[in-house]
Structure formats: C-alpha cells, structure tokens
Length: 160
Length: 160
Image (cartoon, rainbow over all chains, first blue to last red; front, side, top):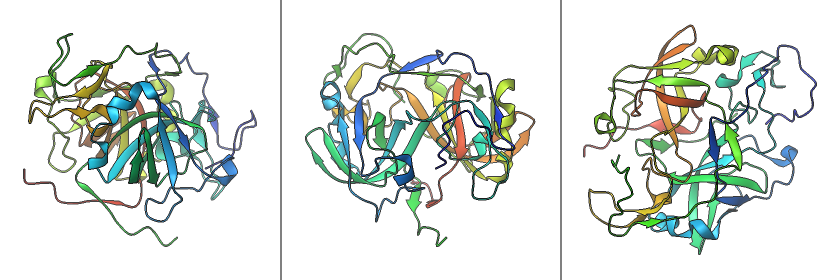
C-alpha cells in the first residue's frame, strides 16, 4: 500500500480531472475493526490463515441480512477505502519505480476505491463477524459481504 | 439470479426502509458488453474457461489506467448491478424456498449492488478488454479492474 496523499506527483504518474462521483451512491452498512491504525501499519495483503483476528461490525439496521452467514467458511468482503485519493490513472509504486496503470495494480488509490478481500470466518457474535484476512485501516466503512465464489481454492502463499 | 423487481414480497423476505445512498459516490468508468440481453439470459455464474467472449469497454478518460493490464492473465472486475433492487435484507431464492440473509447470498439484490467476477483476459484491443467469465447484463456499468489476487487458484467447477 502506497502512502501517497498529497498533491505531489511522482515521475510517471498521470492525474485525471475526474467528473463528480455521482453516477451511483453507496450506503455504508457497518465498520471494520483491525489492529492497523495508520496506513503504514497495514500489511500489503491480508493473510486469511495467519493474519490477526479482525472484527466486522454490521450496523443494526442490516442485522437480518446476516442470517445463515455462518454457513460459509470463506466470505468476500467489500469496503470503502475512505482515505484513498481517486485521481491517479498511472502510478509508480516505490518497489520498482516502473509506471503502471491503476487498473493493473491493486493499489487502494483508484477512481472507485473499493477494496475486496476473501476472509476466513472464525465466528459470529451477534452482528459482529470475527475474521482473518483483512489488511485495511481500523475504521474502514463496510460495503458488502457475500460468500466467496465457488471455483477458487486457497493455495500456498508466495514465498516472496 | 432471481428476477425480482416489483414490490411483491416472497414469504420469508424482509425489506428495509433504507437511508439515502449518499455515504460515498461512484463514477462509472466504462461499460460491459455481454450476450445477455435480459436477466433471464444471464447464467448463474460466469465461466472463465468456457463462457462466451465478452467486452469490457473502458471510457476514453480512463485509458491511461490500462497501462500494463495485459501483463495479467486473470483480472478482477467490479461492476454496478444497475437493475437490482437494494432493500431486501433476507431473500428466499426459488431453488429451495429457504430464507437466507442477503449477506449469505451472492444474489445481485443487495444494499450496495456491486458485482465482482474473476475473468480470463484473452486480449486487449485499445481500450477494450476481451475476456471470459462474466455473467452480467449487456450494458452493465464498469466500476473497476484490478489484477486477481495471488493466493487463489482456479479449481475444477462443480459438476452440479
């Protein structure tokens, strides 16, 4: 995750003058609690096996939508990357300096900063899900939960 | 995919009186072209190996964000399910009549109707990606593209 908030532009970055974000509206349906208080604390990628326990707190209005969620061991979580700037079309991640398009990166900086993660559901406590596999900031707004797709299996993580 | 548009409520369904969807705003960044003209035509789940070729047409403004996207064989696609009603907290899919919470279903009917699919990139033609693995309606608005996560591998689809 790059820490890239100001207006400073790195070499190779292209910024867009984007239209108002009003094609569709979102409702936050809860909040995600993680041990990661700043973006520097966030790991690059959540670990659904070894990562810390995190809490997904669903707002009371949406509690009925959790019915039978505990039937699923792996859940796809969608959330709003509320601190991300949205105008970068190309980016130069620090790791290699090469210019890449935002659509060829999983950077949180995107025209529509929606994060997606597959988590392991450890348990449900009322309208709270205790999970592993998240890498987002504490306080991140929740957008959606759905069973992870069939057809994909977890494989051993890269050694790198 | 249920075809469930009107105000008729099925047994076991709970509707919410939801707040305005104004916590965050989205920008459509392109459009998805599929052979599926109506919801009845849409398969239940896109097949990234055998499904029909579909076209993801990125808007001209966002073309720079495609730089190097062709380095990735599998891409996660986020899109807006623009025909979906958003107030169902529980649903009773026709297949078994059981009541389930929306967050334990992959139904398109959700408080924030964002679809996610993993597709196989066949080729790029300028600002069009030709892919397999989509199951959404022709004309679906595009929200985002990002490389599929590492750590997941395709497994053989269910026989069912």
